[in-house]
Image 1: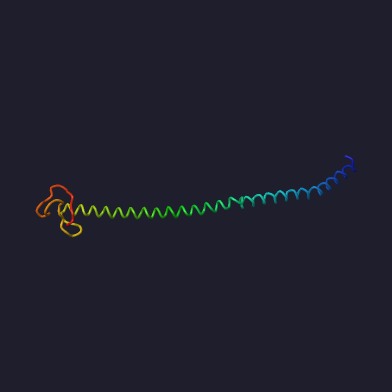
Image 2: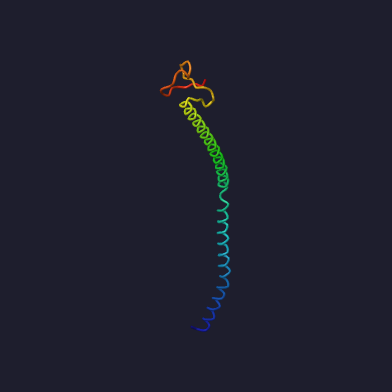
Length: 128
């Protein structure tokens, strides 16, 4: 290769690198800024999405409160039924033994007195 041509190529290479380097650096910087802007916009979301998410959060909180209320009400009703069942079972045991849970004597329905008639089978009982 001719020494003059080598010098011209070297100078052209240096000038090309000097001219192109800032352009390449600027292009890389611009692409980076563009990517960051897109990421930032994705985090913020579209204008309607943020309000929709807030609305869904409020609805979820209301549903949680409603289910808690129903759960507590259901538990209270179960407790009430258990107490009533225990009371009925106690009354049935007392009737079989011939004593009244309330303290008074047990009389048979349709009979003059419980003392004169002994029940052979469980019958309807009335507190007297």
